Length: 164
Length: 389
Image (cartoon, rainbow over all chains, first blue to last red; front, side, top):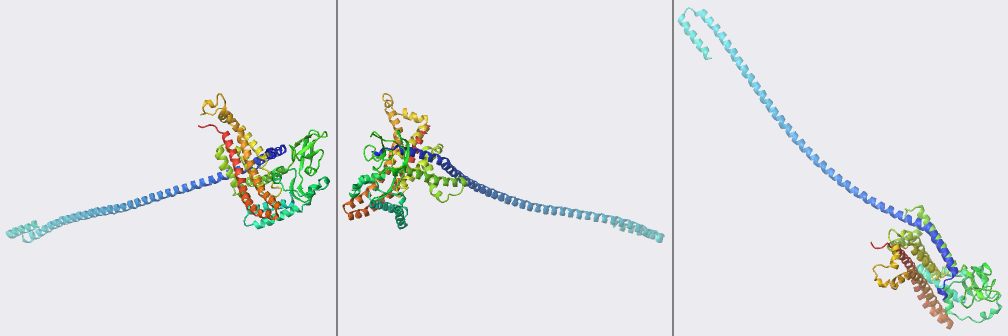
């Protein structure tokens, strides 16, 4: 029976020491320990989360980079294409212009040649007229006595002149 | 109990413990335990001649005392006024402990238990009863011959063991708390490594599932204190060397106080829903409640039965282990009394049994600490329930 009969003294001392140890440990041990454990868990959680976030951002950045690189490539291609087209255009244009210019020059040259020729012909005609007049003068002076012969001669010359 | 019984008993327990602590170092442990025992032999300060001033008691010494298994077992399991270490013929080696008494006649009395020898001496009218309803307790004999029991607040063996375990708990956890406070984010070191998983276990496997994630924090100090107090005292109870070795958690007063704490916490934190569940449980046929309040009565009794069972479970488990272990040791002496050879023969068997038993007791020490904590947490969780939404 003594086994299951708690002694007053033991109850008293147990109550006292258990209350004391509960109070002291509760205030000075469990609180800081649990707080520290929680803090540590939180900080580890945070670190993991931020690492995840960083990884995600890294992936995003890489994806962005790829997009940018692709865009740049497309841009380059476009630019190259444009440049090539432009080059071809410029060359074509230049060729056309050059040929037009050449044609013009040739035309001009032709024109001037014609003009020169006409002028030369005019000049020649004039000279011929002058010459023929002079010749006629000379002939007239020399053979004005022989009428018939003279007229024939004149006629002949004039014809010849007209033919030319 | 004779010296040889004592030594043999302590020696066996020491071997068991050494085996359990570290199998590789068993031999070292045995040697260490023997040395430790020798130390106690050589402690004259605690020793006192038994026969001094007791001439009328001489027949006690001349007649060979017969081994009494009941007093052997219960002498170890029950509380004592002094810490008995061993007896060698006329030599009683004990650590005297303070006796604190309050009686109506004499007021407060404080003296060492060495002033009171078991049934032989009285001091200021106080003596230890040999028989009667107050057997083994201090009684006061009044001048008119009547006997009464004074208010007895003595620092007994179990009280010393409680104080020792409290001291250990404070030292260990305050020093660890210091580390946590100084650098909370660093990895645990040394002894922290051992205790942190246990603390986390109590938090994550006991408190959080039983009470709930948002309400458990308030109960953590109690649960942790109870868990470590029970565990430490259970384990200390297995070590046969003072100041360990007292039967603390197997003394009904100790689990009683802890169970009372549980009851008080449950009553304080009980919600309206909890009381409604007790007195007017929803979803129960009215005839269980109305003419005779059968169910409310049962539920109300359950409020007190739960902590009571908590107390009995811990007490019975621990004391049963102690009694069985002591029973095995008693076998040695019973057979030894018949014939010395028989005693030695049985002792071999006993060693095997007690090694197994000590292992079992270590398991029980953990299980009981866990069960007490878990059930307390469940009761707190029930008390805090807000109803099903």
